[in-house]
Image 1: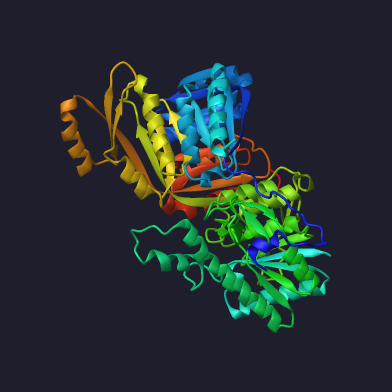
Image 2: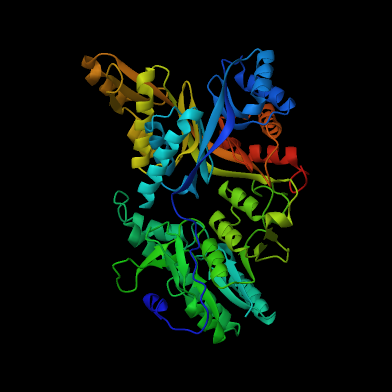
Length: 171
Length: 453
């Protein structure tokens, strides 16, 4: 039986015809609210140790952090808006140089297996930057990218990324 | 008709002895009343005469400077699985079990038209069901399907499914045939809590959820491809990872509801990566976003895959795979970017690495007449790899993060960057320290892996 004959073959056996794999490219873009962005800078050397001490202090206070990233002179992460004040107090007590920006939104771009889709993450980044929204923080996983922006800029970013998704998916 | 899909990896079909053992498993399934459908990978692993990389080498060595067409490459590398399927079907026949080999297209596997990384769109398993009805065991080539373009064309185009393609074939066939279970048969006892090359006595997990196996597979565990796990999860097909060469019960993949407790899954590692940090302090704010956008546009245009992105007030950074790094190097070093936005146009010159290359020096001289040139140093850290701790559910952070970072810090293993998801935390470390990092993290959490947090 040839490959092309297969689809025309008549049979009494019920056939399960299914779309098996999730669609390639961006599947959807969502916004989550209620976060604060923390940038800690100019840490005392050795920076790697001071970073740990800061994270330990935050952890001891039972504050959950997300999107932890190392920067050349410090560390940045997200906390929930609800614990922004508590985080501020801890960082002040620590004597750290830091900025905490509340009322941040996380714009999440969902795309299956995106680290293996050639150039996709770079394309999302280029579009996100060109959207005009100021990207404050970013992290990537195998199936999504999360971008932190000020609340008032999240819809702008979402629109740009949805436009990219429509262009890439041809719909 | 109780169908069981049995997928045999390269080592399970590598030698006549291995094929016989594998075939006996198929016959045993028949004796238990199942109608097995077999999926096979190409014979052997890297370096074996019919393995995918050997076939690729055959065409690439004709002229390394001429990239072969993806369509031709697919036709070539699909031969590995065709050969394997025919040999395996005949092995079954010699043991008294009638069997028929099927190419992916003959098995009714339809894909999209992306050569080398096709996705399964539909399966029409008529010929497989007919074969079963006639008393044969169908042996299907993993990793391949056909794409029938909208404009038609006789027979369609052969496509391959990319990494983990045979696992994906098995899971998708399991869904299409409403199989009772899908068994991925390999040369390890199941899903380990760490790579046995790094931790020789790493325990085998008896049960793991679809989410965990997808996460740990995405992060480098090589037991089952995440695409297969995702299909199995979508269609709720019982999935097992077993060892062809042992009677170990293997690892059962189950739903989150069946294994609800909060626990660590294991440690994985992946990728030979190069981390690039772009120092943008000298770039005026009015031009910075334009410059960043141009960098990412270029990476997208050349299909560069990025990992572990970072933005900070001082610059931006990301990792690229070692295989794509030469292209990135060629693109970035001595690249001149004129930026017109903002109050004053500026010219940026990228300098890759700590020392100025001849190309950068030449560009600098040529551009001298334009006034001030903004040199952007791009620090490159070669030889990195990503080590990840995976958990079954939302992790308690930063406690775990601190624990991982402190463990590595005390062992003097530098952590270059981090990333985290709901189910994992990852650190970028020097490749030379990969196994030590895996071992240390494993030992730090030993007893927690597979247990309650």
